[in-house]
Image (cartoon, rainbow, N blue to C red):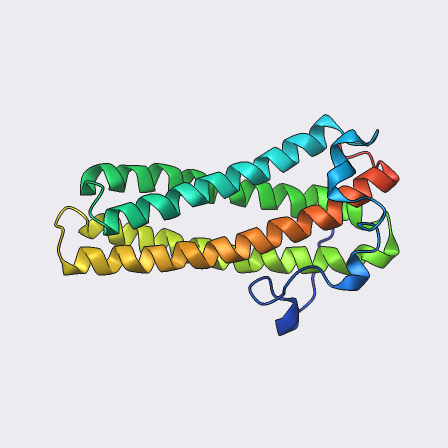
Length: 198
């Protein structure tokens, strides 16, 4: 099994607090701007698939946020809302865990060896994964609490749903920051060095 690249992150490096990748990790991005990624000769089907997975995560999370807000506004029936949250929420949590596992154990060790200037970026991304794991565990617990109370549209159900929406909004902040930074670190490495990721 590949060795993980772990370190303790300082507060400004945490996904929920940073404004973007630190400048020293953006050195390849200047040479490989996002607007040119898809046209580059090293932009592979695997890279396209990986980026599409990121978009899928964003869309699933947005669906959860929107549907939760609709329920709080009285625009969704409790049982159908609970089924949707259970289905889409379970899908998002399971797929994110699997995605992060593959990245941490396979892709990150390969990619981190391509350019020593960027090695610390992978510790940053793994730290993000740990933060996201905690946020996903919280979302799972909040979702289960909400589903248990949802059949009665009472104050307890609405409070549980409000807690879920707050958790989803926090997860959205973390996930979007992480995905943008991950893409801006990794895609330029792939384009510059064309590593074998199969």
